[in-house]
Image (cartoon, rainbow, N blue to C red):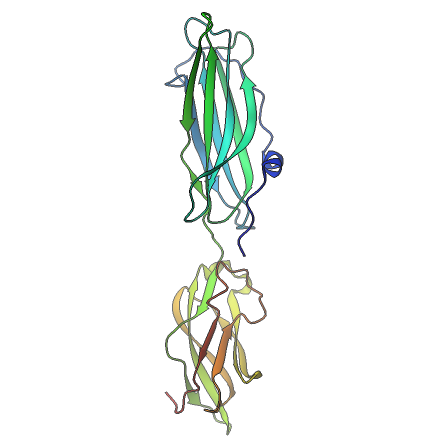
Length: 256
């Protein structure tokens, strides 16, 4: 289920601690323009793939002659897959210290939703000595929060079976696909074969990236009702897509 977009109030609580505005003397590392915003980092946690975060750096430089005041305000923009950008206020107007020739701020926003892209839109403002106001708007590169969770699925290919030594029993051959399965704790998943609500077979199988075949011993199905083949029937694996874990198909009439 998609995670809801954080509210403006929640986003304020997700900001990491940031240093105060800095008053710096001009240097070779000064901003190339009067106002800049840059994406510094875009990452997810390996322990919790749903905890995306992005770090941005904002710099403003005073003009000549010196302004009576200057600073910027910050808005966070989010774009869900297939949607347009939406905007939330993140920081109210931040003013430079009197006499500061440059101001710098580093902001980290946490708790970003999987699949969404985020960026900062910064509005700069300078109050000029002649009473006029100069403004500029800059937008950072976006940070797209990639879903790093694994995905294990029952392939749409044909499911077969081979006879087992015990009468009435078979070994089902279930084609599976897997992505990022190294992230699955223990490296295994459960596969179950059911018919008319009764479980015919269940086994733990070793996972592998790409396509592979799971061997699941159990009772032979009858042709009277369809089979329901499920990977991870107990929901042990936190997957990026749970909709591809089940396939319903006819019982194979002969060994194949």
